Image (tube, rainbow, N blue to C red):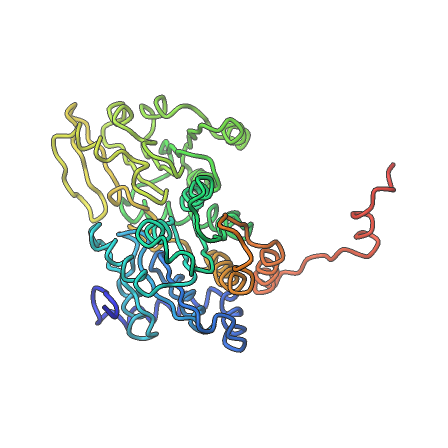
Amino acid sequence: MEYHIKDKTLKSQGKLKIEWAEHNMPVLRKIREDFKKTKPLKGLCIGACLHITTETANLAITLKAGGAEAYLTASNPLSTQDDVAAALALEYHIPVFAIKGEDNKTYYQHIEEVLKRKPVITMDDGADLISNLHRKYPKRAKDVIGGTEETTTGVIRLRSMAKDGVLKYPVIAVNDSQTKHLFDNRYGTGQSTIDGILRATNVLIAGMKVVVGGYGWCGRGIAMRAKGMGGRVIITETDPVRALEAVMDGFDVMPMGEAAGIGDLFITSTGDRDILAKKHFLRMKDGAIIANAGHFNVEIDIPGLKEISTRKKRIRPYVDQYTLKNGKKINLLAEGRLVNLSAAEGHPAMVMDMSFANQALAAKYLKEKGKGLKGEVYTIPEDIDKEIAVLKLKTMGIETDKLTKAQKKYLSSWEEGT
């Protein structure tokens, strides 16, 4: 299979969207210019399991400019932008295996198509590519230089693999770099999650009681944006430090069991399963809206919701209304998948500019240093992280102070005191 996309006729529309995103990704564009000259990825086969969006397209184009052969598949069955997939395959000649709304069988067939190419660097958003490689082709893993991981959920899975001693090659946790999670997770997820909810429902956030499950960087961003739109935000947490931080940030904090009877809109963003379960659905108000911003759809117990329902009806393109046995109606958005990518377009290109700059430079770093690393999860080197921040500030026309020699000496010494 050369590629597998939904509709070839969408290629021109997709190309325009890719070009629009490129304009808003100046850091990645600068890296691409450097890659064209130096070809740091020459001869490498890179397999990527990422959301097929305009921003991902620009990353793939950058990898190709650096000399790599890149093969793409989707990291979520509902996150593919079919016009972008068509443009990548037909305009940029980068093989893509992804169709929005594909079933699970097709999803894993597409992952298999990428694995057939025997990539020596893997790129993941959720760790599905690397987990399938380890499960199905463990001997082939020894030929892989290294991998990268984009999101919190994937990093959790990979650290579990490393802890169990089954991770066979080094993986850079792109998600853990400061220029990724402090911005992409907070500002990107915050804005795009609200965007997806509004596109799906056209509700008014102002005055709503918005329950956010989890106060990690994604939860922080969602809570901040919901509050900014007039939402009355409630946080649920299991981590006492994060719960305390949420309280001091001005939010109400309570267990989900209590919040379930109060909230109008529920958004999960934890990376864990069953954040919303049967016991919570039964306590919810009639007409409650539930959405997920975590990577996998397990954060909402959808099988449990079906068990206690008598009817399911699609009332809007991304809204499934479940009528419970008690007569109440619960509205599930985007089938419990990532609402920001399923019902909207995902993060803005301006913030993905830094995230995918991390991906591109991590691939270069693995080419240079990967063979000397163990099968563990690594953070991207600090100098690369800061290089991306400097480039981003420069493209924004912002200058910062620089330490004087005296200041540097003071910070590196211990003699001076009061």
